[in-house]
Length: 299
Image (cartoon, rainbow, N blue to C red; front, side):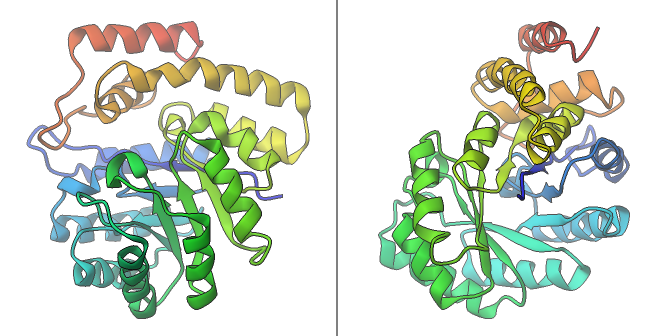
């Protein structure tokens, strides 16, 4: 049983809005020492959409060097320009990334033929494993199980999917329709509360954000599933359910997650976000603290 909880890490910035490599190394070390099963950098929560390509490359090199194969490192390389996506993907793999997580193009809602063409161009020119990234709230459309199955059949380096949808039925359909033909295909949920449901449906776990500030909890949850420790699973599920309100404190969840990281693990880290995102307000900081206190993550 896989039962993996991979952390899509936030990108910690300095007061001038540039990537703070020292602060990010502190974050990665905390995640590794507390048992996460992998780290994804430059995902949605990592603000990939607002970071320049050259700074991404510096960040990728730093992550590969620091993590140093202690746990798997995944890199988000999606973007609107196909060739840039291909080039950054191969760069990340050449540096030592273990796999890529590639969101489909956003802004316009695309027909299946366009999505298939996009991933086909990328997969045929990228020299390593790709995890598809379905996030309909950001792209305006779903990757259907039928499309995913077609892509798997054509491109062996497409090895999995992060399915960030509030409809667990969609994830279950992917598991049922794709894994039946491709048993090794990895299916991860993008919402923390679906971790156990995903596993029980035959999936592989999740790539979800609470692990940024509660890695001990998410690692315990994953370990309890692997050990089939039902009482611990239930306790972890209850705490995750309580923590899910972290995503509703602000209209944008990234500043709120950064504030939670600041309050729990790395008090020296800035909570600056890439514009147009703004840091948490004073009221939101109080709400974060109350939630963390109520769930016993801070005193």
